[in-house]
Length: 221
Image (cartoon, rainbow, N blue to C red):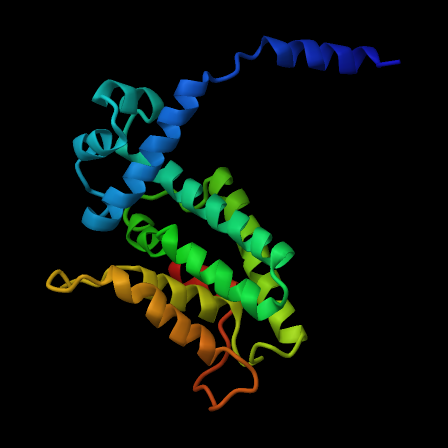
């Protein structure tokens, strides 16, 4: 038999209106379009272009995200959450830890994880509770993936999760002054070269020391 408190909680939850399916689809389209536009033009990209690519009107965009800061915030959460899901799925489904790491890295590149770097500058709220939560999930998944490969002897042990994150972000982020090149076709080629360099046994000695995710947070956030 349900306790009165449980019944009351369920009744209260039933009163909360669920978002309509079309509203959920619109939100997903906006976030996906915003991610691509921010990759091309940075966080100051025109919001009109985002609405156009999402196939919705400006009023719909502002109904979901009242200003640019809110949109940037949610695009960052959107990308990080999707990358975390890819990491969990890869670790669960791939036959070995190196294959899992490769799948995760390529999926993260497809999610445009490198585009987050310029979006985290300026007045971005690095200490927002939602960001803390999704960042912790991604950090945990990344560390778990790397540790699985190192424990199994498939991945060299002289790197840290921070090394992996920085390398993926750099390879997946368009560099200033590369407008004369179409760089997208090279992202996965160069990413695989990096991943092959992570295989054990190591073929060379790395300068410096492994970078942890805590190191990155102290220096960049």
